[in-house]
Image (cartoon, rainbow, N blue to C red):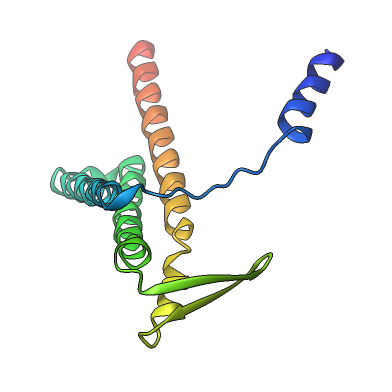
Length: 154
């Protein structure tokens, strides 16, 4: 067992390479398709939120949390569409790396660099959306299991 743990530690921690966790989109065609995917995802989440409201599913905690997730995913998609547009399509903001952990944002439009910086913090919308979705789905599963168990007890 100790050998397996040692191998795990070696391969996943000591032998790790930089992740380079950003993704570029090849050419203008790549970013247009990517933007279209964000737009379709936002529309799908809007449709989901609408259906939850229309079918009055919000009375159940699970569906309410799924609806919160849908709203946050809509905001996240609008945010990243803006960032991709400014960053990769019209290049209104230039990012200069000063040193490790220090960047300088330059824009010819007053205030755009600050808005861009805040918009780049899109994980502040996406991560809570994923958490709401996870919690909502867990609640729906638990409600279903409780109903199933009540049916067996009767």
